[in-house]
Structure formats: C-alpha cells, structure tokens
Image (tube, rainbow, N blue to C red; front, side, top):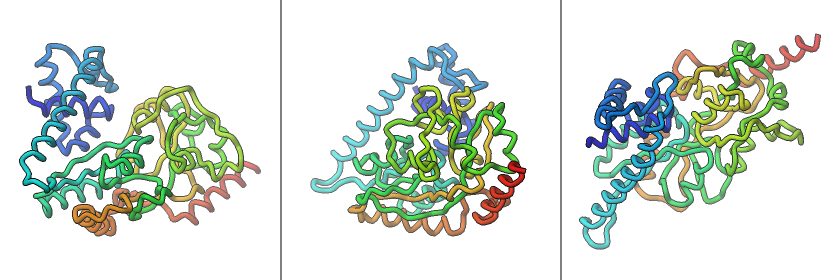
Length: 327
C-alpha cells in the first residue's frame, strides 16, 4: 500500500477539510482527493463523507490503525537512522510545531527556505493542538513552534513575528453574525456562552475567553465538548455549542458552513510567535529563527489587501457603536 494515501487520509480526518489537509502536507488539493479515492478503492469501502467532511464508520476504524502504522513507521525510521550514524553522533533534525495556521504563508515559506538551505537536516512538521502547544516544546517533542498567544513560562523564549486583531467565531444564525461587517466591542461577547477548552495553558485561556477584559465576570461555558483544534471549534460553533475566538488571519485559512467571523473592535491585538526552549542554541534552531524573522518582515500574516485598520481606529469604531446603541 502507498503510505502517502494513509498520510493524506489522516490529514483530512484531522483537519476536516481537503484544502487544509493539502496545505499541511504541501500537496495540491487534487492530489489529496486522488489519494483518498485510491485508498477507498484499496479497501472497497467509503471512508469519508465529502460534504461536509466526516468519517464514515469504516473511516473511524481505519483512522486508529493508520495512526498506529504511521507512528510505528516514523519510530522505525528514527531508530534505523540513529543506528547508521557514527558512534557518538546524532542525526541532524529539526521538528517544527505548528498550531492552527501558524504564521500563515510565513510558515510554509520558512520551511521551504530551510529545506533549501539545510538539505542535510531532517525537517518534520508536527501539528499542535490547544492543549499541547507549550508542553510539546518543554517535553522535547518539537524544537521550535509557531504558536499564539506568547508564552510566559520562563523556560521558553520566543520571537514576535506579527500582531493582529481578534475575531469572534459565531453561529451564522446568531444575531452576532449580523455584525460581521462592522464588528462588535469585546464587552458584547462576555455574556455569550464560550466553547469549553480544558487543560490549556493559562495564557491560552486568558486569550480565548478575554479574561483580562472580564473584570471578574465568570465565563459562561457552552455545551460540554472536547475542543482541541480549530476544526473542533468550528464544528462546535456551527452546531450551536457556543462561540469561539481567534485572530484575523484565521479567517483566510479556515472556514466551516454555518459559522461567521465577526471582528472584535477593541480587543488587544494578539502576537504570533516562533517559540523555542530557552536552553536550545542548536545551529538548526538558530538558522530557522533567522530565516523566519527575515521572511516575517516582508510577508504579512494576512494577504495583501486584507489589512485591518490600526488599533486606535478600531477602538474609535467600538465607542461609536456603543453610543449609537445607547441612543
């Protein structure tokens, strides 16, 4: 069996979207679609519903086996690579963690540039969820990570790549969705039910729930759900389980039927950072940092023509909306 087909299947199952699976694998969407069709032909069963993307019962069973098989293959490759190295040396590698869409096109550009500059280093990409984006660094599962918000753990260092405005992700049928054009002040969201995210770093909870803006107002939790990834959040919002929050660039890389993105006018802008362990000064990490920083200066997170107004303009818009609604 061609293992590329299994890789594509796992990516589509985890992303919930063919286009985003293709971005994750650095393949074209038609290639991913072809891999899924070939895999279904191999097994003689339908593995995925297409619209919306969802696993069939057969697909759910295969996903468990596919993850184990691919994990075992990666472990075998690493084990054999170490065996063939001269005694006392380690194979050069760089593991890059990416949370959500990372730093947008900067992420894929940095990966491509690093591969071109350092073909001797084994480069791998690890998808990070909401819970593990910091622990993956601290536990040595990745060497660098594109994450947000910026961590406060003093064992982690980071480079700020960009900052951008916030958005709310709401059900398309919600009254809040009517404000998708002009946006809303943050205080109009604080009484809404938010999707529950559990066992996340404190910084992420503060970011996701706007804890600093609440002034002690408790968070209303939506329906119990396990929300670990952007597509968990989008599916749950579409199902009416609550609202979620993200950053403006998210809207250019993710979508889901039944959801709407609403600009949050007066929330503090959020940083996207490239994080690393504070005690890791390896040449591969330093090279990747330098490449990413150079690219981030010239390649914005948001596509050209989609730049948001500056924070002062957004705050003034929020004040105007409050005055208009109070009149």
